[in-house]
Amino acid sequence: MTIVPSSDKKRIVIIGGGFAGINLVKKLAGSNFQVVLLDKHNYHTFQPLLYQVATGGLEPDSIAFPLRKIFGRQKDFYFRVAGVHQILPKENKLITDIGEINYDHLVIATGSTNNFFGMDGMQHNAMPLKSIPEALDLRSLILQNMEMALVDTDNHEAYFNIVVVGGGPTGVEVSGALVELKKHVLPNDYPELDLSKTKVWLIEAGDQLLKGLSRNASDKSLAYLQEMGVNVMLNTRVGDFDGVKLLYDNDKCLYTKTVIWAAGVKGAYVEGLNKDVANTSSRYLVDRFQKINGYNNIYAIGDVAGMIDEVLPYGHPMVAQVAIQQAKNLGKNFKAMDRGAEIFPFRYRDLGSMATVGRNKAVADLPWYSTQGVLAWFIWMFVHLMALVGFRNRVIVFINWLWSYFSYDRAIRLIIRPYRKMKK
Image (tube, rainbow, N blue to C red):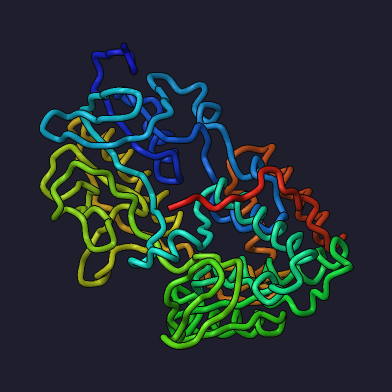
């Protein structure tokens, strides 16, 4: 069975169709390489808007785009839906669920996955938010809990408490969206329920929200959330979660049916390389040219790459801009290597950070300007709208946002596939 056509050109295999993977493929257009992209899905996901799918603001297909359509006209490019199980570096070969694939150069761009820090109950019972299926599961669970609250009156506290763990951008944004869902949408659907009892909790282990942003932005986001009615708990560490009882600060607990995990991520590690090439966060240790330590033809970019130095002891932040810039630099270096020209080390240009909290409420730290409120909210919307892949997706998201803004409604509150917890 021939998985990929043979070629006289050297083959670059890229694992992962996220921001890093698709930008590297684009940069290699017109190069003297055969480019093969592998991903377990046939679409690219715009992860920054997953929380809006989970809270009924957007359809899932408005933040996804077919990978084959992105590169439909690119020559010497092949895409295969495949999960990669193991790398065999001595043989320059990958073991995948569709067979073995050889490479001349390998680029690992698998992104990140959830890190539950060894809490088995949390891993089994909490709701992560890293993929479209997970966002749909969370949407279904929220609506199913409202349906159950109509008939199971003995457990209203657990149904009405929604807990978000982690005060980064995902935690802040999903908390704000949940409060707006509670205030403007659910009362119309469930007039029989006293939804004033519904509480959204945001628990953060550190002393501030949005740690990657300025202290001013952090304080403003906290003020916004508290003004909206979110119960924010700083300097609070969660324990385990059994599906009904969430432990925190050792001896305290919250009764809840919904815990959303936004507290920790780690690199999506692929088996096969030496164990010492990854740090404790499962990020591959790379040099300034994105090459994994100890390997001449294996690279890592994006969230799964850890470029460690004195200035960045934990590596670059795990955000889309780092992945995009690393991909473009590596693509440029591949072309230069083919010509025998000089290659250049990666230097990150920080374009700023931002987060939205709710309607007309956002914070933005840009290289030349920091702002909060309505202006930051419009900047956030424009940046995310233009970053979406595909004109159709931009139009659909824009229309949905307009509808939600003027109607105070979230139209996509559908239980398409009921969420069922998988057995251990």
